[in-house]
Amino acid sequence: MIPTTLGLLFGMLAIGLPIGAVMLLLALGLDWIFSPMPLILAAGELSWVSSSNYLLVSVPLFVLLGEILLRAGIADRLYGAIVQWIGWLPGGLMHANIGASTAFAATSGSSVATAATISVVAKPMIARHGYNERLFYGSIAAGGTLGILIPPSINLILYGWLTSTSVPALYMAGIVPGVILALVFSLAIIIFCIIRPGLGGQKIETSWKSRLESLPSLLPPLFIFAVIIGSIYMGIATPTESAALGVASALLLAGVYRQLSWRMLLEAIDGTMRTTGMIMLIVMAAWFLNFVISAMGLVTSVNAGIVSLGLEPMALLAMIILIYLVLGCFMDPLPMMIVTVPVLTPLVVSAGFDPIWFGIIIVLLCEMALITPPIGMNLFVVQGVRRRGSLVDIMIGVLPFMLALLAMIALVIAFPQIALWLPELIRG
Image 1 (cartoon, rainbow, N blue to C red):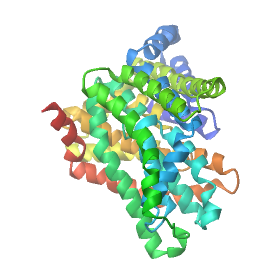
Image 2: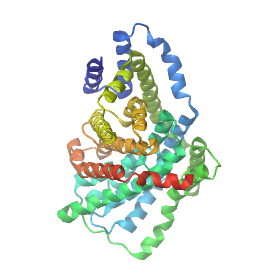
Image 3: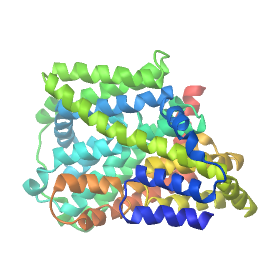
Image 4: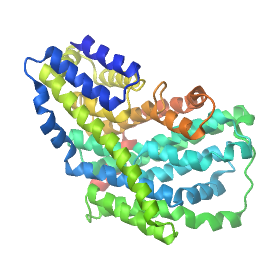
């Protein structure tokens, strides 16, 4: 049963089918081959149940929030301001890529939106300042991954939904690791630019006057982050309602910058519908696939097989990390989470690990999947903006940041309080 399932999965991924279609076809195939009853009859009800959860309403709202910020020109102003403050470091604008990604991640909740936005803004800087394209684009692809770790995060919302874990607690747990990971990415850039100075481009010249004048451009992301997170922890709004407040704040800022128009709104809504449609197709297909493999007894078999190994807690965690690293080569983070988290989380919790801490580990592994060849989503997003050269250049450029991510995962495992300190502080 398991070899057939894996064979069908990797076979359809190999021929390039969209991941939502792959999961739906896999569920139908397994139903036809193994099930004594037509499980497809439950597809309609399962699709409704999986897509009508109140918490998931926040997904299109956060996507719309990112679309508005991009089209209102706020991302361009943010990038320019960050260049003024950290462009002097070895690696120059590559640190601005990481810094702008960090700030934009605190408003968008999406890695793909973050990578696409910063790619568009930063692209003209490469030739102008003589940067190594591989490392420069690699820093954008890696920085984009912060979009699913720093709250508000769509992936943390989905993890909370799948495991009945507090989303506000997950949000708090993602802040410190997100900031530390951004610093680790910047450290990787500094190390490589010290070893090979030619990678870092021309030094960015600025003045304190320019820095001070740029400060207002740093305020919009901080304002939206404060609205979203503050409304949750002041008890004013739920995570879903805070997403709506974030959209309202973005519309207000677009009006302040005189970018609010019917055309801009229609473009933002169109982009939101496309992205949300893709996400919800994946959610519904993965939910039906989970139902089919559970009805087949595959989940029970996998759990029993893992338990029978008698692994120590750290060995179990190491095996799970290895599974995610392999799956990340072939699957996008969203379906990977929806398929695996309901199966693995009970095992991890029974082994004594905190579910909030494990959620951060899962999201870090999903970040790795976003830049892991051959189908890391951020690699294709950045290459799509680049529109020339080979995808291999981006794959080579992200290698230092993949090592940085592995180091960050090891750091959170060694020091769980990196993720748990802030939730415990707020709870206390």
